[in-house]
Every structure is written in C-alpha cells, then in structure tokens.
Image 1 (cartoon, rainbow, N blue to C red):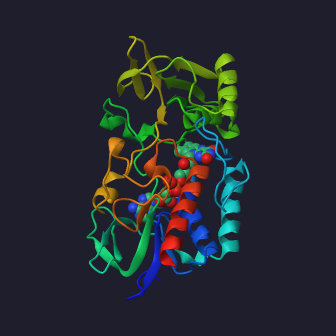
Image 2 (cartoon, helix red, strand yellow; image 1 turned 180 degrees about the vertical axis):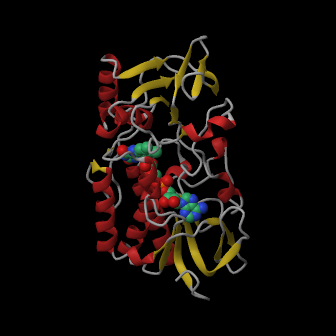
Image 3 (cartoon, rainbow, N blue to C red; image 1 turned 30 degrees about the vertical axis):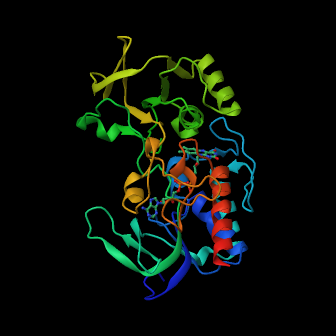
Length: 338
Ligand SMILES: Cc1cc2nc3c(=O)[nH]c(=O)nc-3n(C[C@H](O)[C@H](O)[C@H](O)COP(=O)(O)OP(=O)(O)OC[C@H]3O[C@@H](n4cnc5c(N)ncnc54)[C@H](O)[C@@H]3O)c2cc1C
C-alpha cells in the first residue's frame, strides 16, 4: 500500500503506539478516511509489548498525574494483555486496522514546494529511500523509548549483556538491581518479586532520593510494603558512582557513599530521550530538553501541517495524555481539510 505511486493521503501518522492509534481512530470518526499509519515494528503498540512486564496493570493515572479523557478514545484499566486486546478491538471496530503499514522506519519527513510531505525511510546502515506516497499532513507519534535514558557513568563493554532497560531478560535466581524512582522502576522491582517464574531472584531498588516521590498511589503502596518487609532491598538515597566487573557476580556497583554491591543484572528505568534526529531532520525546531516547539492547543509544530504528540513532547507521558493529544491534533487537521 505504501508504495502506491502518486497516492496522496490526508494524514500520515508515524508511530502506532497509543498516540498514533488514537489519531487513526479520531481521524476515522472525523470522517477522514484517506490516512496511513506507519510503524517500524511488526505490530502496533510495540513499546508496550517490549517494556511492560507480563500481566502489568495498565493505570489511567501515571507518574503521579491524574488525567481525564478529552477525546473519543479511552481505555478501561486492566492488564497489559487485556489492554492490547482492547486496542485491537477498538482499531477493528473503527475499521482502521488495514490502514497500518508495519516494518517501515521513517527517518524524516520533507515538505515539498507543493506543500505535500514525503516520507524518508530506511533502517540504520541501509541507504535511505523515499516513500512514493505523499501526505497533506503528518502526525509524528514515535515516543521516546526507542532510546532509553542512560546514567552519566560509563557502561563497561564486558557488562553490556547484563545492563538492561526492561526485565524481559531477568532469569530466576539472579540478583537484580533496579535503578530509578518512577512508576516503571517500582513496577519492575515488585514485578520480579511477584512473578512466580522469578521467585528466587533477589531484588534491590536503587534511587538517588531516599523516598518514593514519583510513583502513583498503588505503586507507592506496593513498593513501600516490599521495602518494609525486605522483599525489595532498599538502596535508596544514594547515587551510583561507577560500574565494574564483579568478583562474585557479574556487576560490581560502586555507590557514592563508599559502599558497593554485586549483582547479576542491572535494569535501568530512567525513561527515554526525545528522538531529536527525526525532528531536526524534518525541520522541526526544538527547545529545552530537545522538546519540539509546538502549539499547545493543536500540537502543530513550526512546520505547517506537521504535528507532534504523545511521549515525544513530554517526559511525563501517559496513554491517556497521548490519546488526548491525538484528538486535538486531528480536530485541527479536520477543520483545515474542510
Ligand atoms: C514500563 C512502562 C510502563 C508504563 N505504564 C503505563 C501505565 O500503566 N499507564 C499509562 O498511562 N502509561 C504508562 N506508561 C507510559 C505510556 O506507555 C506512554 O506514555 C505511551 O505509550 C506513549 O505513547 P506514544 O504513542 O507517544 O509512544 P509509544 O508508545 O512509544 O509508541 C511509539 C511507536 O512509534 C514507533 N516508532 C518509533 N520510531 C519510529 C520510526 N522512526 N518510524 C516508524 N515508527 C516508529 C514505535 O515502534 C512505537 O510503536 C508506561 C511506560 C513504560 C516505559
């Protein structure tokens, strides 16, 4: 479909996560049928597939922020697996499943003199090519977990197989250090404690602050319970100075207070980085923390017709927020297409 020569769509949506999928449904509800959604993964919601632990509760209020749905797309709080099923059903019901093209990584979009956007694709190391399809408007919703944040200290090469950004590789009986103070770190730490297949793991939570301040109520309660009863070892209130190869376990962690610990694996839950390249290479101006400059009501950037939504524009993102951004962006496009 993407190679349909000469085809012009009203909206090309880049990224099929919560923001992109909600944008597709909103477009359909606004009567905009001529759209395409492009994702580099082989399925929608890839970030959720990869980073959410098995059976994870999908909360509406995330990172201590409460949200109301302002658009047409909503979800019921449930498990990761049920959430993905809800999304499948919503996309099928809206009739947009066949609008999605998978396995295409978009590198940048170029606005031509005719006012239409071309999309340049290609994976790293492979020559870039331009889609033959063009778009009147583009909604970028590529998230930020393509590049998870790393700490300032060096990751020694010998340790690269045991320094992770989610818990999918954790094996039973490993001693695991989880680093971070937000909901994701909390869920990873108690997720390991609660998963039956990881019941013999030993989990340590490291956060530079001594208290939990950034988790939602439920995660705070669960983590506090496990920190109090010792099921999660408390290594909060201290930073990490450096990592090196350990004597008894693979990783030796040197803390800034002079103490050290040895672990089989470390899992970093420090959020992600704004995907600056795709923005800058598409002509979008970025400001503090590389966040794209955009209209706060419509989400349109300085490039007219190019919108950015979801995690791309905030490090405090959530599913509900991405849904809401999508509805405002599509409303603006729908009004302009009339
Ligand atoms: C572990 C974890 C747990 C979380 N739990 C919750 C929760 O319980 N409740 C909640 O509300 N929020 C939660 N969040 C946050 C929430 O998942 C995000 O805010 C939300 O997914 C953001 O949606 P998005 O569409 O902006 O980006 P993403 O979900 O990151 O989707 C981006 C999509 O773009 C695709 N993509 C990326 N680059 C390209 C490219 N160049 N070309 C084509 N496609 C591309 C990706 O494959 C992906 O499908 C959690 C986050 C994490 C990491």
